[in-house]
Length: 182
Image 1: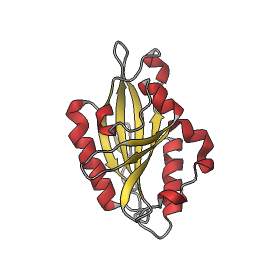
Image 2: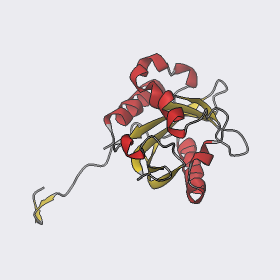
Image 3: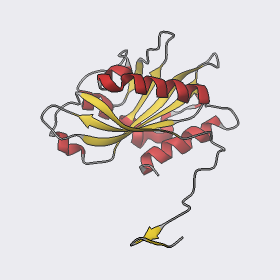
Image 4: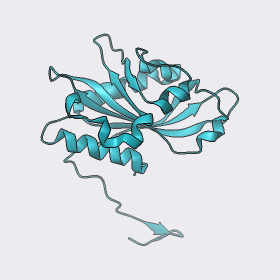
């Protein structure tokens, strides 16, 4: 279970994909999720394994304190996590499935803040999967950064969501005070 905003954008992505593996970039209308636009970003993918930022909402640019257009998105991650994120993006692209990174926003002199980062693959006009619709969704109080810009993002966990028609795993066992209740 993810933050409701993350779930909403995943549902939107799945709706726009319809019977296709992924939605076309041209089918995604930012007017359909205006309230999330500050947190939304779009990445490209070029042949050399770079993921340039094509578009970044106000929250995303404010968090990093700069215009990110054209920057390789992998550079926003801690050096020790870049290969892991790059591999996960390639897997999400090949499998045509969204991926969520539960991450830490790190800023100098401030405690880290948890965030969900959604990467949902999209196809370009040539039909190739070469873009990602993304969302930065804080899962803790962003004020803990004390107005300091993010110096890097760190990976806590990476989770692929599987194809849209794949059933989510269901809870099979629950306990209360050590006793099985379901």
